[in-house]
Image 1: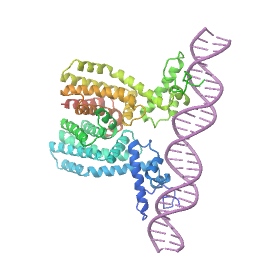
Image 2: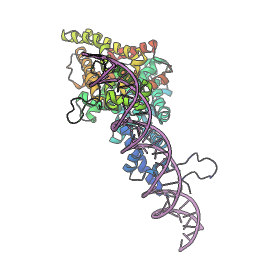
Image 3: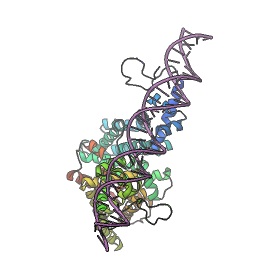
Image 4: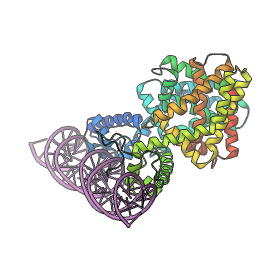
Length: 234
Length: 234
DNA sequence: TCCTTTTTATATCAGATGATAGGAATTGCG
DNA sequence: CGCAATTCCTATCATCTGATATAAAAAGGA
C-alpha cells in the first residue's frame, strides 16, 4: 500500500509517518536517527545548503526514508525546529518560570535585574554547553536571520516568549511599561548580543579575540560583558 | 577567439574580463548593470539562494554574459563584495580618519568616546540611508554570519579595520590596552549590535517593535540605544 | 504459521542550475 | 571601407536535487 495516510479518503494531506505511535516500534529509532542527522547538518549549513542525500547518508538510511518519515525536506526541517524548541524550552523552563513568578508577585527592581541575569546566564550556559547545543543555536540564529520554512515556529515559540519575558523584566527594572518601544529595543539588543556570540558570528568572535574555542573561560567573559550591559540599564 | 585570457599560455587562470580598461567602452556599462543586479539579488537572498539566471534577467542580459565578465558565479560574488567594501569605505572614511587621528594625537577619554559615537553613528546612518545600503548591509551580515566565497574580503577590509578602530577607541576610553580580550569583546559587542538591527534580524526587529520600516525616527531610537551602551562602557 | 501492516531499498523521473560551444553582431581603428 | 578585437546571444551539456514508483524485507497480530 502507499505510504502513510491511512483513511484512504481523498488527497493525502499528511503523507508522512510524522511521529505518531503505531505499535510497530522499529521505525521510531530510525526516525530519531534521521532527525539527529538533520539537526547536525542543518545546524552546520542551513536549509538550502544541505541536501537530503547528505542527511540520509549521515543517518545511514536510504533517501526515500526521509520522505517516508517527514514527508519532504521542509517537513524534516520543521521537525528539527520543533525538537530544538522543545529542548531549549526544557533547559530554560525553571529560570523562566521563576522570573515570570517574580514578575507576577510584583517584585522590585533589583529582584527583576537578578532574574534577568539568571535567565540570560542559563541560556548562555546552555548554548555553550555542548557541541550539539552549539549547532542548535546556529540553526535558530540562521533561521531568524534569514527566514525560512521554520521561522514561524522559532519566532512564536522561542523568540517571542523570550523577548516578552526580557522586556517584562527590563520594564520592571526601569519602572516603565513593557510595551514601550525603548524597552523592547533594549530587550532585543540583549538577546541579539547573546546569540551573536555563540551562533552567528562565532567564526568572527574566535578570530578577533584569538580564541580557539568558546569554553568555560570564554563563556565567563561573555557573560560578564552581558552583565555589564544589564547593569547599564537604568 | 575564445573569451578573455590573452597570454595564450597554459591554463586560462583569469578567464574573465574583470574590470580592466580595454578601449572598448560599451562593456563597462553592461558590466556595471550586471554588478548592480547581483548586488541587489545577493543582498536580498544570499549566495546560494540566488541563481545566475535571476541576475542575468534582472540585468537584462543573457546568461553567458555573467561568465564573460566575471568568470563564474563566485567571481561575481567577490566582485560584489569588493564594490561594497569600496562604498562603505568611502562613506565612513572621514569620521574614521578623524578618529584615527585623534587616537594618534593621544586624545583623552571623553574625546575618544565622542569619536566612537560619531563613527558608529555615521555607519548606522549610512546603513539606513537607502534601500541599496540596506541590501549591502544584509550582504555583509550574511556573509560574515555564514562564511562564503567573499568572507575573507569582507573580514580583512571591513570588519577587522572597524573592529580595530573601535577597540582602540574603547581602550582609550577605559585606559586599558586595545589587545585585551575584554576590550575587544566590548568592541565586537557594539558592532554586532549595530549590524543586528539594520541587517540580520531586521525582520524580527520590525515584528517585535511593531514598526513597518526603519526610518529616521526608528534609526534615532536605535542610535540612542547604542549611545546608551557606549556611555555604559567603563 | 499465515496474513496484514509497517519499514526499507533500488531504480528512476522531472526540473533546476552552473557552465560551455560556437557563432553572430557590434565596436573601434587604420 | 576593411579588419581585428570585443561584446553578446542561442542552444546545449552535465550534474545535482528533491521526489516518486515499485517492490522486497521485516515486524506484529491471529
